[in-house]
Length: 233
Image 1 (cartoon, rainbow, N blue to C red):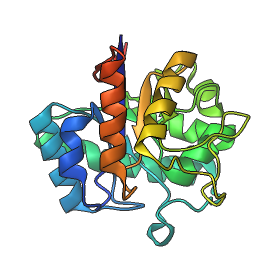
Image 2: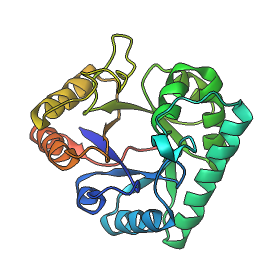
Image 3: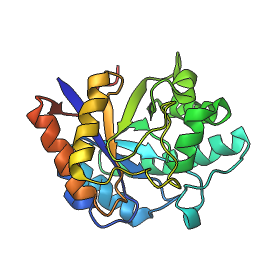
């Protein structure tokens, strides 16, 4: 048994270097919702050093709200902004001999794309343009849009609670976040037992991300899982 463990990195937070050897995939911010050319370069170099798979993590150009404010934008603008971000990351990755393997939208763009085909379709169009897989919630609008166009990798979150319909609980709700490393580990194992996900995420901007990732990783290994990057056919 094997499972991918991913984390959002390159956003300018303190623990990226310590997280890199603990994970198998890094979702790298593309200097739109957060990060800059320096943080991208540092993250790419660390990923290369530890053999971590890399993916593009584009979001709304809304640094004031960290890309977590839902914006109503036309499909062509979403496609154009995402393509610009992915192109930037791709060009920088090539300098270090690395290849982007997938696209995972960030924040509000992720949530909207998982709910609404109007946001999912331009995201998938960019993934198709660059020959990338797409990461998102299982049975989502994003998965439906990817069908027949690009590989889709269903994702679960160890550090977020869910609504009954399978969407992530809004961050504005008091019980949105998994509070303890032990609960995060239990949730990761529960998600895997359901058999619907191929990658697990812990958010890199969480102040408690290190103990959460370590607890999830230890629980996965103890349960007999090998932590390795997902295979893209």
